[in-house]
Image (cartoon, rainbow, N blue to C red; front, side, top):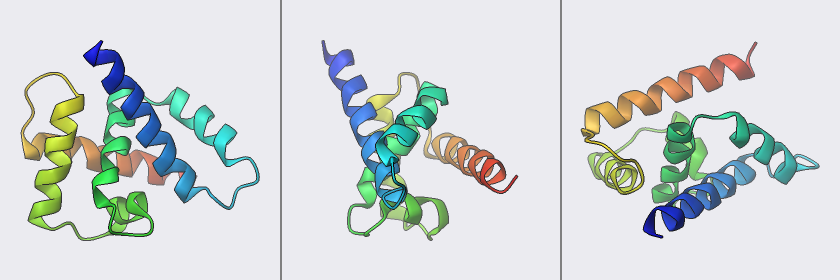
Length: 110
């Protein structure tokens, strides 16, 4: 049951974060669902963890392009560790995040 609740929370936050970025698109919700359905589960978890940047008007935007504080890195890693099974270090989590950002930027600008 706990796993199902975590999965639903990840999906909700990931969709919320993506819709905020694509809010000006005519059919943002449909576009976001399509994008998220094509991502690996770990990537959906990473996107959902950007909710920790809630002090910004666009948390996902800050997560991709902003300068992270040490507190933000720790909060992001803590959130990620709650959702993703396995043993993860802050460095490993951030490495996965930066890989996702690079792949995302390449696909947007191709």
